Image (cartoon, rainbow, N blue to C red; front, side):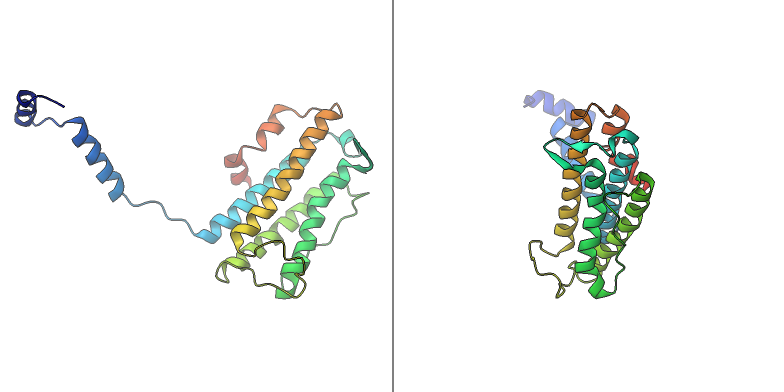
Length: 205
């Protein structure tokens, strides 16, 4: 703490102590108005970015990796794992969306779907999932339960629904990256780094 003589000198000179400067900054920051964002736009935007990350990863896979067998599960391939992402969306949309009049995308053939066909299908199912989330936002933040929703493993507020599906797809994206390395096709840094560049992916969504 400054001595009495120093405090007097500061007072006469009009200088401010560090404590006064800090308190003024706090008051100034508190007075500034935060930027407002619509919650529905944020929820849907986060999903769209995650969808873009999934598509970005699949587009970065070398062609020879699609039919590669998963170690320990010789009946399954990378193609089947990637197709599961779309088909899972389709199944949930049939359960939670169709009874409310929302569109359900067609499933893809997990054995035969081509990379371009799958990414195109993911564009469609991604938009349909976004519509489901916005529907929930328009109904007090909760997707109304349907008679088809028998499993009841997922709370239907939009925060949980978003987290569930982003978590599910992140899990399988990680599997694909790890499998590519195990199978001798380590993905380039542009791809493995790109799936974490959500700022850039959000601008593409």
